[in-house]
Length: 106
Image: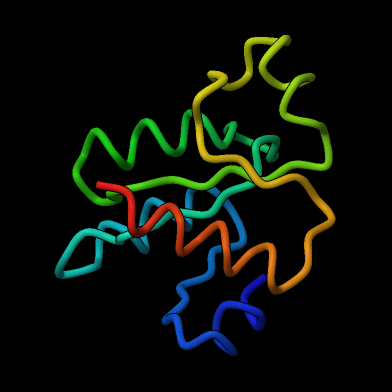
């Protein structure tokens, strides 16, 4: 995903863990326009990470990714049905379209 986004002209900050993402986000001078996170991660769920970073004003919008389908995730109560979601695997065009759609929403 990082290389795909950079090839589209986006500046990307990458973190290997939710803890590192929280540290990185806190170091930024301005809020990060879009957090892209896996739904399921070791240590902390993507939902919890997103809630913490948006509550602290570090992140403005969130895109969740998962190998599970949106229906399975919504039915298990892991994510709300109306969140921004991109199923894996995805290609560059699908990622570009989703990111642009989210960033253009007010």
